[in-house]
Image 1 (tube, rainbow, N blue to C red):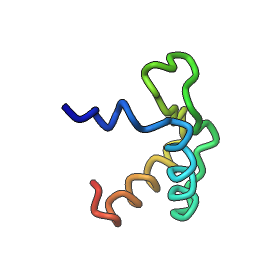
Image 2 (cartoon, rainbow, N blue to C red; image 1 turned 90 degrees about the vertical axis):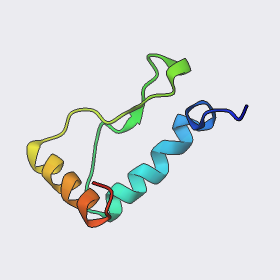
Image 3 (spheres, rainbow, N blue to C red; image 1 turned 180 degrees about the vertical axis):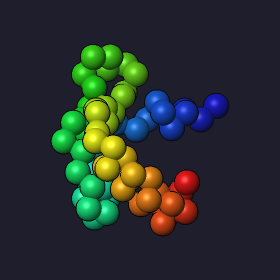
Length: 67
């Protein structure tokens, strides 16, 4: 049985392309980081964002056909 993608993607590796993609869309998430609280879960923390940033993030996802 192949490993679940969740089990093989390193969160430290995931943060940088996400940060770069958001930056390209003009979106900065200052709290974007690896959540060190539960390393086995491999969580990426987005943190809290202002409402205007949430709207810009949603618009970027819509433009890319993700949402």
